[in-house]
Image (cartoon, rainbow over all chains, first blue to last red; front, side, top):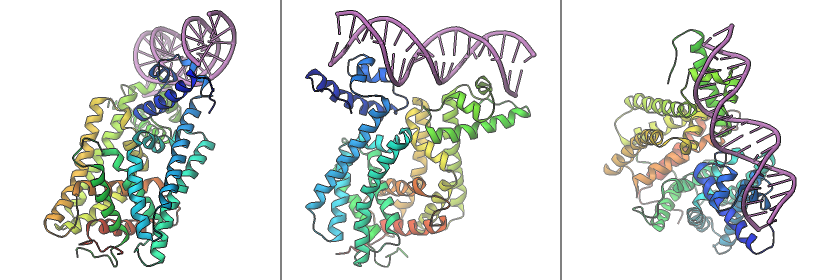
Length: 204
Length: 204
DNA sequence: GTCTATAGAAGGATAGAC
DNA sequence: GTCTATCCTTCTATAGAC
């Protein structure tokens, strides 16, 4: 991302990121014009091209940075966790919910705008996403191998868990009936239901 | 949806629906032009306006019809199911997966293009979606009340289950390693894990 | 029922003044 | 570093010929 080292330009560069994130999340990449973004930060459209080579880079940089921060944050978080699968799964679920609820716009964009990436940019984001999913898959697999988890298919369980956790973003509101910590508890309970239930204690 | 009753027009009207569905799913509503749609069905852009008043109606009709077919199909399916919560849940899960895997494009659009609906159209689709979710929520609630299911929060469980089931659409491929019936079985197992597990048989 | 032609608005991106 | 002005393309939607 081209960025000047001047003084006022630093702020504009930051403003651009923030405005693009907000508008892309609200209206969608394709529906937002460079003029709209410029207006949001109080600048003329032409000035934007001092900070980004084009609109596509604006989207890609946004998504790439978000995914990298996600990967880095998990790297840090996982260091603090005990080595057993159960602790790691609990840690992952809480981490995922907390991280994603703090960045609703970025998460939304990262899921909705994959279509609008160029081929090479798409490949790049996809590989980051896969790296993240692999962390969870590894936890589930080690749980299965050590006999702690009961799972027919760790890969599908990975997809399921990530889908249900990320789905929280679509309905959660800070002013809602549940605090985010309660949400964490409830979802944790459901995730543990998915992985455990040795021999499936079904309601007959 | 404006539609003439002539002969050749009938086919064009159908082609329009199909082309719009395909292109909206592939590139997104905002990124697809009326010219593109016209080209897809071998007609000039102006001719499209014989079949739709505008682009927005094209999107709305698509989504509205899809949601109505979903609701109707479940109505039919649920008639055939025994009255107990477990049978209904099993029926719902299998129905949801089967229905959604048969209409990948429509499902994708129904989730991704909510932003691009006008206010009143958005309200209309949202109410249909809620009606569908309510069917599952009712099943879960009756299961909890009769003591068959163990769930901290039926509403969140509804969101979770729908999110994880619909997520199948993002990775499932007909040529993949799993047949759709195996997928049904595996997901059913996980859903039952969520609702059952009396006193949560956790991996200690 | 479909075409061509076009109105009128908006888009991304660049050039050059300040 | 930002603005104004502008090029060129593309868009939705309509009018009128066939």
